[in-house]
Image (cartoon, rainbow, N blue to C red; front, side):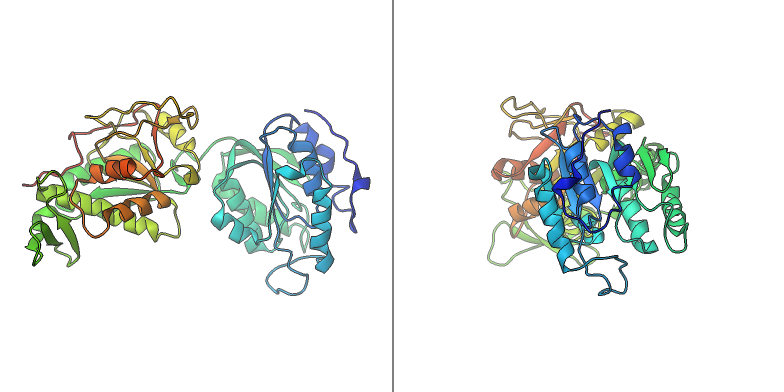
Length: 440
């Protein structure tokens, strides 16, 4: 808890709103100037608050500040409330932020907050919310900000005691925060509201990372469907999609004219895929292996076109977790940003155990990069949208290997493919050694 002198004489401004704000007077009570801060500011106006945050919170070499404001001139958009925004306001912001301490650690996004959050992949431990005060916009700003706020992070909301009529913003903010009851504590409550995030919702194990869980199952295997449903319920998973896999036992296989090894596989729903029986050392796959690999391929295609998620947790219906609920949540919460990896394999690689590549720095205390070698089992893994695209690109026109080899081969053949694994195995092999539904 340190105070830093903020020299207002360095800056040009027409409104003194920030000077008398509780942020200006009280920030030092809740922060330490030498800690690492990843700061987000929603709504910048002339930049005084951004310059203040830059001066006070960016003194560690790893600290950053992201400023978001579309600078829509007042009165030009009927759906967006903005006060005193003219053509000069943006220019004044740029000049002020350039004069601030630690300017080189700031990033500016001339976007609406809605557009920013759609593209954002970062998490923050300090967020200042002072954007559009219209109820719908304010609700989304509070919810989106809280969802990308780290544990123990601070969210500072302006105008809590304001609005037209007075009390309007308080009502909107209070209502938006109800879904996070028990996940934060109020550390300051006056005209501005300040909360500290204390934990994730216990009933939502993947929502904080915008992870969608895709479970591969077959309608005829009711016992396995019941097993995985009960398991995920015990572990408090949310956003689970049970996807009916391709049942290889009901597929037809027709030779492609003029080819010795190429076959057209047709499922009972009418979809088709090309299969090459020569890919795996001339040994063809059984129908269960074909159906399983095809099911995973379909999930990659879904992910690539999914606008609501950038990463899937893919689970087969026979897996068993090898860690308890709390430890699994801890590992998921510490997954690195999706842009930093393609595949995170959390299943046990039975035949080819992972070995840490000591020449590459660990991702963090929970994950590391293994040597580029074969691995097996595709029962449980996180795959990002970028990773799914790379796997699909490796398949080209046909496939001929099991689901786990699709991933392993892509890792070996694509130099840019980024595989990470947890420091301990999170999922055992379940009742089977591999990811094959054996239906001869």
